[in-house]
Image 1 (spheres, rainbow, N blue to C red):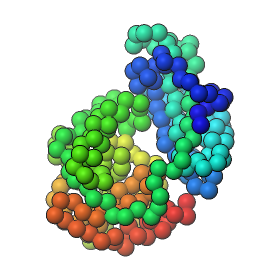
Image 2 (image 1 turned 90 degrees about the horizontal axis):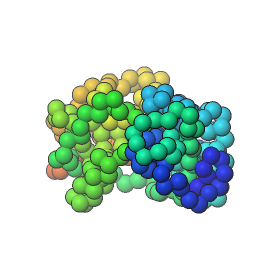
Image 3 (image 1 turned 180 degrees about the vertical axis):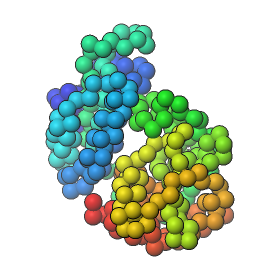
Image 4 (image 1 turned 90 degrees about the vertical axis):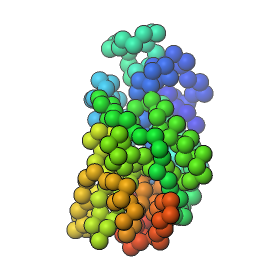
Length: 265
């Protein structure tokens, strides 16, 4: 189901700047038992993105109400929120008088849990530095679309992507964690990548449990020498990595413990 500005709708404005230029932001929210998971974190990131792009964010309470109403519709497993600058002419220039348009889409769950260990490969195309757009869940995801196509062509579940310096940044749709000697680390996303809400929630959870996560550059050798590797995003939660080229892992204790914790959120 689709709602535009809070009203059920079946069509989208073809000249919406979100379609024309990717001028907007989105959040993809998991729904469990009719309730959106990590909603506050999603809305906080959305508000921060609006501030950076100069979008007039709708009231937080309004967005929360929209999401919760969509989540309560039957068979909903995912709610996607999209904010755009609406229709505003054919040029790049912004019309500040145009109100922000909000789209809310409710769809069935995309995956069923629990997930088996992921088969991953390191993709050959580097993730480019993202400059002013780094960390934003903006609507132009063509780089991720092409990287995802490369992963599918390799027959793996997920592709890992390094940056132009050879540091492994993330998966095509996931964040990455590395466990070695009881220590947990995750790639530095200062130049590229997106800080997923699940990534942030797990970093906070581990810190509270006395296992602070180190954010640092991660190399390919760090992956091969790891005791455990796992991926995260809002929909899959915690996804252990089972294979990377000729390396094999069983689901380790840290991954298993976090999977159990996320199942209760």
